[in-house]
Image (tube, rainbow, N blue to C red; front, side, top):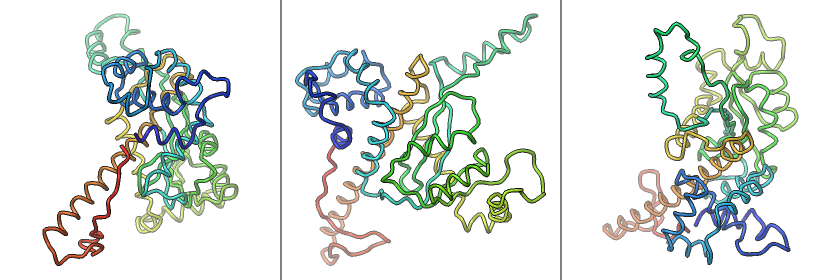
Length: 339
């Protein structure tokens, strides 16, 4: 399984040399990934494992862990240092990923902190409009889980993640997000929206980390005056015309919106944790699970393309393996998905 491979590559076998050694950390991490994938809780994934003996056999589980074991493992495995290694392992396992990223993009998005129906909220507000006391319908939930990520534009893999609680401005979160980027990953260009516009962020990226930063200089009140900062004046020249924006490939910034869309549509748009730290762990687990699903999908597509090439070569004897057709090399070297 992909989650087992990621856990084995980045986590020690046991948490301590005096540990009971009943479950490896990779097995517990895989259970947490399955919990997120099935959008259930700790008790629910234990019931899933009871009903799926083949899954337990694939994970080499001789016993099914108690739900409290998984809850305690999440506190230990979903800390920032472990998550940084897990994200790196999931990125390096993808055959299309490289340690040097040409175009990366950073952004943040909010998540729901409960399972209440938005339709129910709208109907409640509509039904209480005529009340003399408008306190009920005007009350809004102002705090929500918020996740900031750095995403690879070419593969949509998450390179770094920083959870927090919103609403909060993005301009002050870039330094914390960059601190979660693994040292083995090198970014060439980082594309950000106007919410990150500041001279300090340009200096942090260009001078300290040697990353070319591209941020629209639209933070604050709109004005036509040249910016006081040299780097922000450079951004004004870069974003002056559509041709200059095309030259720096700023349109690739929207790839991060695709990543957030895939996370919320395919995995979950709500975080089940109650406390602040539990919600942070839930968002970090969501980012790791998303990377693993991208890796699994990539292996499935590669296997499907291999079968297509095999069928094409067998149906047309004149085509040799390795021939380029339609921009794709035709060959049928056997590949294993490792699922």
